[in-house]
Image 1 (cartoon, rainbow, N blue to C red):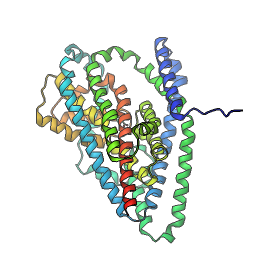
Image 2 (cartoon, rainbow, N blue to C red):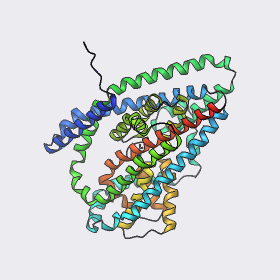
Image 3 (tube, rainbow, N blue to C red):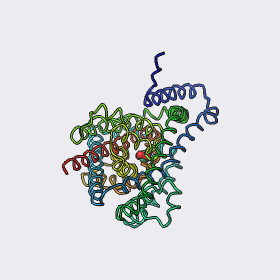
Length: 427
Ligand code: ASP
């Protein structure tokens, strides 16, 4: 009897997404709101929790084993410098694309003024919440970012998923110590971390079996929740389109160019390889929750080495957000124009600077980008209440920009991996 061919995971996830969208539309139409909330949404929450559950152990074990297996530390600093340079480069390009598009299309100009008051009133409470979050972030020393990275207690750092950079710091520290010590002294420790790394990867495989159901539940319930806002979408159509256009340029032109120039991977293989991660990013709106799958895709499908993936990706998930920064550029100019303000060149340059820093500071969770947008707006003297104008379409745009964020991290990983391999061959 012929063996039944198994459907590839990304097709299963895609199917889950499609059924989720269809279910969401039907449920919204027939108002199965409570049913969705009680019996569908929890599966999505369980799925996200599983992904988050594995994120911390994954970073810990894969980074320590990745760095611990290095022959010498110079490789780490070389890799670190290249990674950061590429991350900053792609972020600045993303914001620039966003700014060029928003200046060309000028969606703020056609924003109906009567909607301004309506939106401000509707989203008043949420705006205050985000402003308060941003205020807490603003009133800090410029060095606070570095202070935040160094944990005072490792259990505490690992106990809160928003402390990802602290765990990365500790893991790099420990990895370095392992490399410095003579090999015979660290054999047991290295074996332990390598073994645990394998175990964690297996757990991710098992979690991914659950992905089609998870994305079905996530998308189905999101659509039901967004239902009432459909009418507002229209008013914001041109703004949304500008952001989407920018994000598409990044995904379909900018990253493929980078991949073509700097790696030997075929563009089709690249997209096929990272498709599961992209779909999860879209469904969860969180690059942090997607991280375990991004790492697996880059390693297994793109063939990047474990040491590169475990170093470049966790850092990328926390600091490299090209989609978010592009969106911040577009949103800032859109809000300013809708308020009747014209931004000069200096102000737009300030957007590039603050949005770069803001995207580094944004947490890799749903809606983080809009908090940091408050800081960008304040920097250019635009009233931050303006975020009320774009709340209605923030979730779908968040889904898309998270997909871009994850694609950006994966591209840089492929590039750094290529650099490292080339270096090894030459030697
Ligand atoms: N949700 C995004 C991420 O996790 C951040 C944002 O733009 O809100 O990558």
